[in-house]
Picture (cartoon, one colour):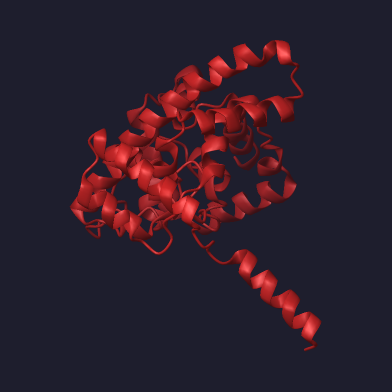
Length: 288
């Protein structure tokens, strides 16, 4: 290997390793933790999460969570020919399990498989963001600095003129306040999960939205709807049986019935995006 190739290989490796938290990021993380403590999150839990090797302030997740309303997601790749074939194979390979979920939860196995595919490619892509850090970062979403960053992103990407700046800023301020409050709620759910000892929360990785496991549950969703699908005494969303049964349980408990309108409402509760709901039902119809 030449020196040039060695340098390129080293830089490539560094790109995919965990980022080093700089002093500014560390300060922001401590500022977020102080705010979380003031709003009722346990101090010992916060200290434990901040001591995790992957802990760090992630400003990117703040911008994405606050501004994603301005972008229409494209789910078409989730129900193209390649995806349909892979989900059909997944259904065939796991027919016994998915049929049991359908029988026990009264949710069609095609819907369960479609959600697993869209959320994590049936467990193969579950996210690399440190989940506690996502929520700690979001605690500062309503900070004026991050509100301005979010505003700049929307104005730039959407090419909006200055006349719309005030109305967009008001919307972003409202969303930022809601996201900050939501982050506190999810941190408290993580604290409860950690206290129960059911998983190592300090090492939990997931999406930029703070969702984790094959079904990409939020901490509060895990607490409320995750179930032990294989009866081993552990609820592990990185286990296919637990993940599939948890999806079925979630949809049933959130109103899934034989009526199409109720079905769509239940899936919308899972992800409040019309594009997501349409993708789930489109994929399910193609693999049925």
